[in-house]
Image (cartoon, rainbow, N blue to C red; front, side, top):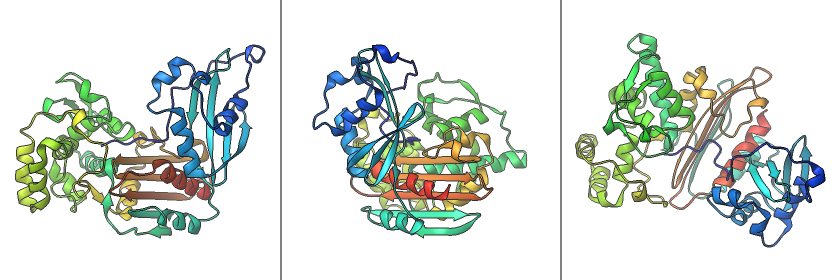
Length: 391
């Protein structure tokens, strides 16, 4: 499972080197305007090193933003940064040009839909195809809800349950944040994350594993904690998800060569599913190339309601590791926040706990499932716009 933190196209690492205006034939604002007003984007507007780092063409990025937010209106300067205005929202943007006026760094932050109220947010989320759930709590009281008691696949947001079970064991004295775990080969999964590339036997503290699981959505760190904490302890936190899957098990079930195992798992009861997982765990690790880009078997996943996600994040929001990755929320807008999201093809979740400048506590949990590819930019812009109405 992959959680993207801010899953908006982030073209390349922004370099903050300053360029003297006297040697720069084009201003940054003009460069942004050209991107959004030209019918065809030219590659020579960018440095070759920049183009080599981005996964999709700049044209695709621009079109996706226009599709989600409507027609381009203009650019506002905000200090050293910029705000691109559209009919239905805006996108905070950072840009760096080289001495020739070519783009060498470009970052589109999470877009914000223009929403006048929570009711409008609910109405917009209802227009998304497939299944959608949304819950907004203020001081644990419901402010807005859409299918908030419907369980949907949530991708890596399930890691909140792993963290809650771990926190409970630490509180009871059974475990400690300083416990050291040796990385086992059969715990290694696929990205996101970094630990899949570390040597077997690498020693990490439980706190490091938890921080990687939440902030980078490291799947190998997650599976290590699932085995360290124990599946039974996690199933006690979320009885719906029995048997509780590791990320490696899910990846193996969804590879094409294991179709027979997948069908047996889907058709089986809990005991039969556990038998299938015993067979799955005898298999070599999955290859990244074996994982498709289209939604597959969305009934084999981790399922939570928006209410359950808000309950889980409330219980772990006090942990410092929960704020390493702020998700789509801007940390400067809040006293404190905690975030976990999740995604796989056809699945997208964002769950954020926030402490406002006025002292009010919020939870915003949104999930989208569909058997077709998701418009992530649209979903993110609606979610971020909703946060804007709360701050």
